[in-house]
Length: 505
Image (cartoon, rainbow, N blue to C red; front, side, top):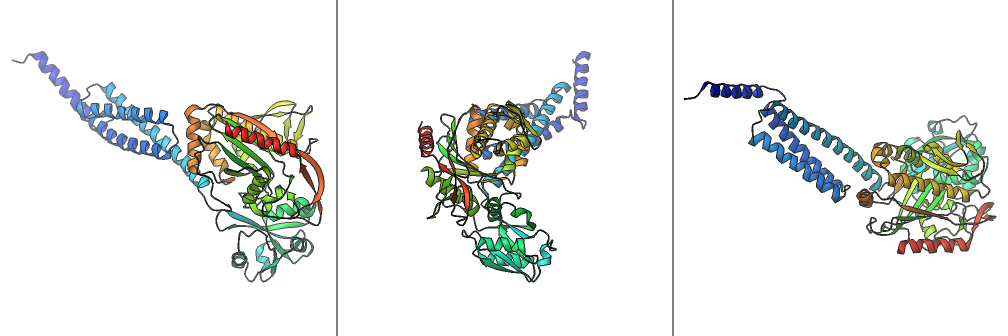
């Protein structure tokens, strides 16, 4: 015979069960629905992390095992054991929802990073920028006003775009206009500056090179249009080596362009030329700065030598890279070419850096103040610091030292703190379209995975190639004397030895 106390207990269990069966967050049926949603999110999340290949094994497996373990526990409570305690049910459901939201958020961030990598490290497209210029006081202010007119253009020595393609491009945008090709650059540039009814179409690299050696020309003309034209494939001579950069020493060529146009034109003056010899096994980097005015033989040319910076305006990063390989007797494994805005965005993204003014006086440059000694700066002032040369007796050579300093301080902050992880969304958005590289997505994921694995700091050493200033004719401008730097062969030899020693450690 069942006593009254037993009946009361059974009635309470039935009542509790009925209460839990009501539609609510405490309902066991709701728990089962949450379980299935959580399971789906978990499978997608783990698959996404695995495919991204960014997380080291020592982090990936504990995370995956922990999530799967919770999934098993969740299954036990949802299907094997009825939970009569409201508190237990709330905790199980709440924890599953929080984990689901966390996985969704993390998955979106991983997608953001993957999209950035695919866009910037797997994009084989390259673009030429052309400027349409007219006389400063000409009444022509738009391309449409050049209808049925003749436009002069320079017959570029390095072909990125065929004449027929460039002609069609112009004719499609300016009805009736025709291009007349000239082999003499001065003719093309001077006609636009002197004649009110004439326009010239000039590659941005050629334009920037010309105004750099013809003081005052920029004040005589105006740009009425800028065109971005896709060229036929990347301008590279050969495919990069397939070595795993996370465990193989390599040389990275850092090529900085101070372009007057947005984005990354295929050709521009090579204002920054730094070889970074990297040994991931010893965590050492050697930065070797080669001044922009170094007098070198451009690769593939004979006769007159030229400024190194002109290699970038004549043949883009491919010619700059080949010229430096010839000059230094090294093989450059990878390159990264950056617009100076890249530096500004990166420094702001990691929260600023500290730079050292080694002068015994305060520098004030475009609103940026640098006291003697250390100064904490944002992206704008870090970039201005890296650009300055007129304040130093050694000019461009000191600028190279400052550029190396900025690179070193960025590397130190990124590798020794969580700045990169905390601010990577900001960093990615600010860097898009301001660099191009032949570093592949496989390269970059291997390097990120290596750094996340131990987050150890790197030792960075700097060395500068030196020389003596002189005036000389150049391959690009054979009819006028320009300032050049005759390289000191002793410093060149020392740089070669330092690179060789670091790569062989």
